[in-house]
Length: 346
Image 1 (cartoon, rainbow, N blue to C red):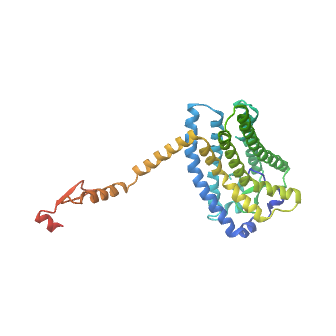
Image 2: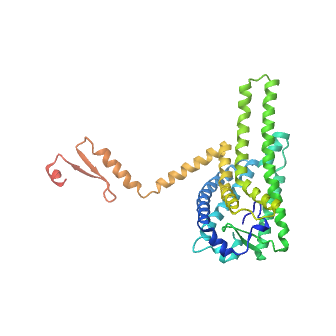
Image 3: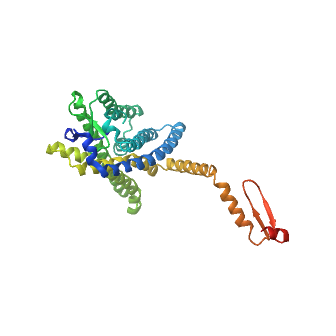
């Protein structure tokens, strides 16, 4: 399902089989993107979740809790991307010919804390997460049981049919997505302005050098700009598509919907990469886990013994008058080339 910026009614595909045929190679490109993004995301989010859960058990913090929720949702999305890339292609597009399969298918806090000095209770954030995530999931499950889900024009995801009594909830979901989109942009814009003013105030009141004050603020400002840019790239296409259909009353262009879908697929990786980039403690523990996993793979490599044997042969055969040959059957077989019998054997 596509839960973010839900499709406008005019985007519904009334002939899913023909839509699937018309998508052709362009649909295959998106499916390849789904598979690789999903595969990388499952590995990345799985390892990141193990680090966050370990950190969460040691010391409870709202940031760790929010990051864990984001990573868990991204893990579920990445698993869904892998299944979508397979079932939309092999043996054929299952969600077209079997529509019932469609049923299987921390920004604001920072603004309040940095700009206004407000720190909300953890239970408030848990409640917001439950409502924001649970409502669209429950809605899609109900629509699936009512068999009111149809195929989209891109050919790789499903949405809710406009010919259903519960379609008004689509407007609620779209409104929630739009509010979330502009809340993120407003929060980080406010953080940028707040940090800039704080740097100027520190320079004047504390008589701090301009370069030092700027260096203290530039890190937070750049981080906020990076997050805003990635967020606009990821979700801006969906917002633009929804706005186009709402204000013009016409069906969105196929190219616009295609680009928006391609961008939003990558968001399952962007969130986790941002967590690794901005959280030094999590990043260090993540790489420790990554190196341990690498060492485990090396230890389990069946070619290790063969490669070690070849290395020992090359190291022991130079300038010693002896040739050492190591194999799996014989631990060590030494031939002295100074002996005539061994010369003939060689």
